Amino acid sequence: MGATVVEKIFSSKCGRDTRAGDVVMAPVDGAMIHDITGPLAIQKFYEMNGTSVFDPEKVILLFDHQIPADSIPAAENHVYMRNFALEQGILNYDLKEGVCHQVVMEKGRAAPGEIVVGADSHTCMYGAGGAFATGIGSTDMGFVLKYGALYFRVPETIRADVHGKFQSRTGAKDLILSIAHDIGADGATYKAIEFTGETVKGLDMAGRMTCCNMAIEMGGKAGIVPPDNTTWEYFSARRKMTPFPLKSDEDAKYFCWNNYDVDDLSPQVAIPHNVDLGVDVEKVAGTRIDQVFIGSCTNGRFEDFAEAAEVLGKNSFSEKVRVIIIPASREEYLKVLRAGLIERFVEAGALVEAPCCGPCMGGAFGLLAPGEISLSTSNRNFKGRQGSTEAFVYLCSPATAAASAIYGEITDPREV
Image (cartoon, rainbow, N blue to C red; front, side, top):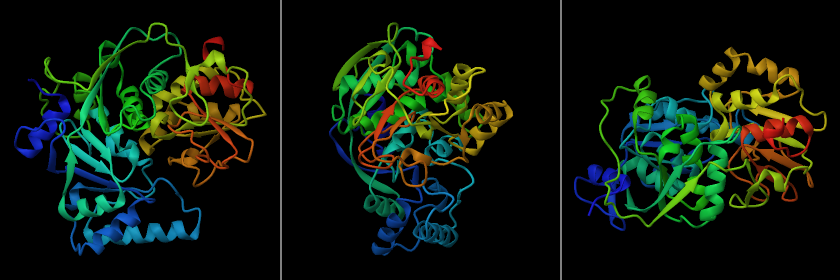
């Protein structure tokens, strides 16, 4: 019986044949902590009598959720982490680089065939680069910081085979919202989701990151795209690696094999208060909105802002809507800046912020008041996610967000 790409990664790292359901102690190639989860993970490291991290070069430390510090406790957390980085000799990306997941990818810290863990649920985004990447709790991260390994149950794999050609102004975000609707919020619990098919092969890395980022929204342990030429080209400028084959065998055993066709896929909108409540945009068109957020680790890349700018054209954003635009990293910010898009967005009435998580977690700025409605390109729309528990968050693509920001209500981007 053949093996899935995830089984192959674990077999390689453990030095023996491993299959879905096996419980293994596997070494990790990278461990990421940020300013929210990091302090607790560090405390757990010390409680385990940790003195030196397993490998300073494999520990990734970033600040992104509350930067610059928006409270004294946040500032204290930052100092605590900076001191830990100095003590351990860890490369500290601090607050200059951006959202942890985007930075990990663009710095080449999660590559094909590797096992990478992060103290954040959306760590699964690194699967876009062919890594097995998953979020873990702070206690587990404390263990990893000390020992450089962790117990895993090798997950079964759901194969999402995608075919067809996207319509105008539909793309990866619409695809993953439709898949989440199909699989459900807990339909992939502790499963890996392997994205395959001609449509996935045609996605750029930005689109693949969007899909893998939201695997957790179905309960997934990981999302992964088997590496191909697009993958290796992306990493060629970020890390010295010799390409190698890594894909599932034709006779691999899957938990299930789902097929999707995007030929007739409409722009999708996930309505409050669950990510799997995706509907065609036509069903919610006309819904008033108070705020639009374009950014986050899900859709904060240059390609996303270029898409939004194309929809915006020479229009201005509605005076009734607060539009917040945040590139996911300094690298992406500079791309958007040099392309003249930041000037265009500001002229249109948007507020452009430095790279960070922004309103996504509702922890820093851009909070919603009771009764307010946000349309967001981020990954979650739970109650209270972006402020008041009496507010409402809808999720969509950058194209839909831009179109809606023009008119002050949810709008089909194909009609702009």
